[in-house]
Image 1 (cartoon, rainbow, N blue to C red):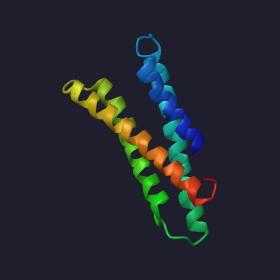
Image 2: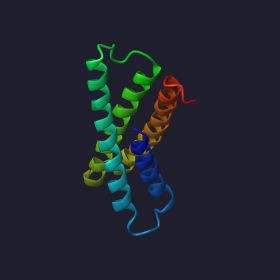
Image 3: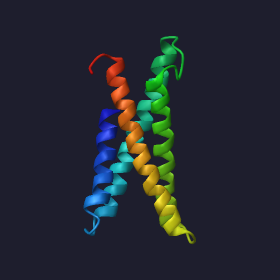
Length: 122
């Protein structure tokens, strides 16, 4: 999950700071796609781990923050690709994609910190 957060943070940074370069969109899509897939894989593995330990799913702040982060990331991911092909309301879709991306990244960081607190690292 930490690696996924790094990929997504790097992908967002590319979109913010390297926007004037020709290759920024390809890098942004690649990094965020990898980060999103890692995040989804981590979420699936977390669900499997909890079910094998007879734990309660989505019990606690970390789990709830994680599922919110996953939903926001997937939604932003899909909207990002859709807004490139949309024939109407492109600017509106782009703005929603950007805002969801920021919310997604913030929720990933919150879930990451909550997880580190949960295991006693912080």
